[in-house]
Length: 170
Image 1 (cartoon, rainbow, N blue to C red):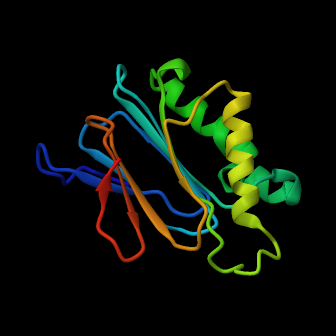
Image 2: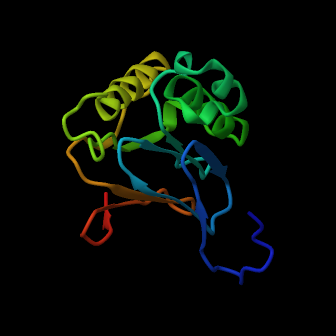
């Protein structure tokens, strides 16, 4: 996304779509992932380096479709999370300083939990972050509602919106 037309000090929303990841050190950037159902949105932020990132993954394991994982590693927890961590560290973040927020993993379309994608995504994100020795600072997962999450690169503030409600700072 080009931000060449922004006014000085104006916030710029950078959308993180499904199976997508974005990182930034631009103080005016706000990363946002809309309508997290069974998908999970992860925000990471280093308050010292003022670097943040967001991943919007869809499925727990790349072995479900290794061809798709090669084309788009951000579709899966086990390939997307390492990619997110590597990208923020390449901008100067340190894993031990990361503030992490996780949202999503609901059973929106699969009410009878036939596939359990939301639950499997929840387990995958916890497993992958634990593997990288990273703790979750705040999580809101499960249930049967969509969520939207935003991260300000300026100060690491994170907002969460649950279907039918206003954004709230977390």
